[in-house]
Length: 392
Ligand SMILES: Cc1cc2nc3c(=O)[nH]c(=O)nc-3n(C[C@H](O)[C@H](O)[C@H](O)COP(=O)(O)OP(=O)(O)OC[C@H]3O[C@@H](n4cnc5c(N)ncnc54)[C@H](O)[C@@H]3O)c2cc1C
Image (tube, rainbow, N blue to C red; front, side, top):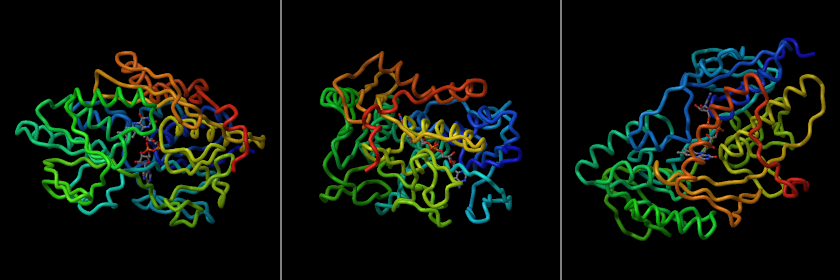
């Protein structure tokens, strides 16, 4: 019996949006009601936040436009509480939404709480508004030949440093990383990346942690102080505390612990996807990425559609297959990987890689468009033998 079954999807980022649209298609003509909740009416392309920081104007995508024709109801607001026993979500502004099934897709954001001064003095790529403020600041700093420090040598920090350096040749860009930047890549791809950063004039400071962020400098753990007219913080992520606050089982970072079909282990009417879900496969836990997030959303939409019809479902399986990194608008490097995201010998660089990366970054919106009518798959690899074994 599906008539009147209420599904609430929390968060309209990459995974919540895909869950809602695919669910609408997979449950059409069944009487299932789907509601999508998000604080902003704009769909945020997080994959492109560093482009905004570098001063590029990006198109605005309205959530209601992306949902057009799906029948999904959009509620604008932030969810402030979940009552899993009463099966109700409270949204700021006083709205209360009852659900039979909940999809938790609240994502993650950069954690500025780990180092003194970062929250007060550093910019992040957490929203288009903050990235836009950084862009304005960088224009001022560049005209005076100043310095920007980018803290964090993960993919986000590297993409941001390269993008900013390419857009502002007059700016000194320093990338600070406690580890070797892109340590997860193979030697050749990493060497390519280092050469590209060098060509763009990015100074690398590695093997040391940032101890403090000041208004005009960053202090390093080894006692050095580096000038910083603008600081971009990309090191570390956090997730909303809503699930943990509601007594839903989470790991120590607040990600919902999931079973083999991505339901909460404590509250099976709640399904978790994307960065806010702790998903364990035989090779280890998924790390927050669109590459793994979209498959969790696709799988969850299909799973819920089957469960509401009383059908059986198979466990979630997924394997990584690439690590694409943009190096400004004119260069990129793609490291191909095994299912567990460790590198294989194959890589792509230069113009082919730029095209590939752009295709990947644009693919979520294309997927949403087609998913209104057909079942588009975002699962390139199910991981083969690496995901066939039981979870340890
Ligand atoms: C600059 C940058 C570059 C990246 N590049 C890549 C890349 O190349 N490849 C890759 O795979 N990944 C990349 N990532 C990571 C990728 O963006 C995330 O893994 C992805 O966005 C996760 O999707 P999500 O739907 O779980 O979360 P999000 O996309 O963060 O969406 C979460 C949504 O929930 C909403 N929300 C939050 N709190 C509430 C609340 N209380 N109530 C209602 N809604 C709420 C948010 O507003 C947001 O709309 C990058 C990230 C950044 C920042």
